[in-house]
Length: 131
Image (cartoon, rainbow, N blue to C red; front, side, top):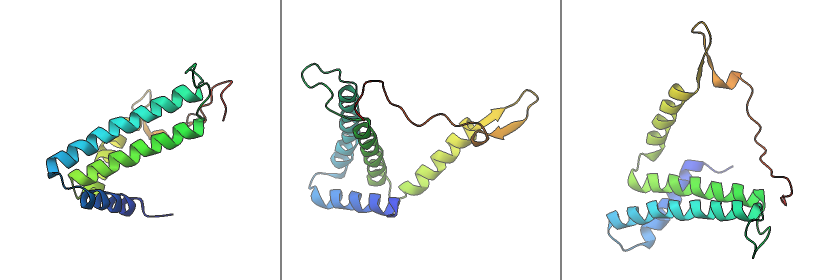
């Protein structure tokens, strides 16, 4: 498995080397790319649910997952292009999220990590969809 942050850094460098625009414009366009990729998630969901009468079931839930991955990668590349220490920035942010959201308070103030609870089902399939 490739090193995720090295791959992200390599992608960011490739994009930086490709563009002749000023840095502010390069970053702005990268941020807009996140929205473009999110739109592709929406398109894939509509296709997986067969809700475009002209196209029918044009996507699978696997396509939706791939599009979500594209959003994540695009966001990571954007962060890297904004801040060369993106990995540390992201790690600090994840620590804040974990400390804020992954502690469950019991009836008597007993805190336990969220991972000790039953995890929700990761399989999201809609009846009648092609998977």
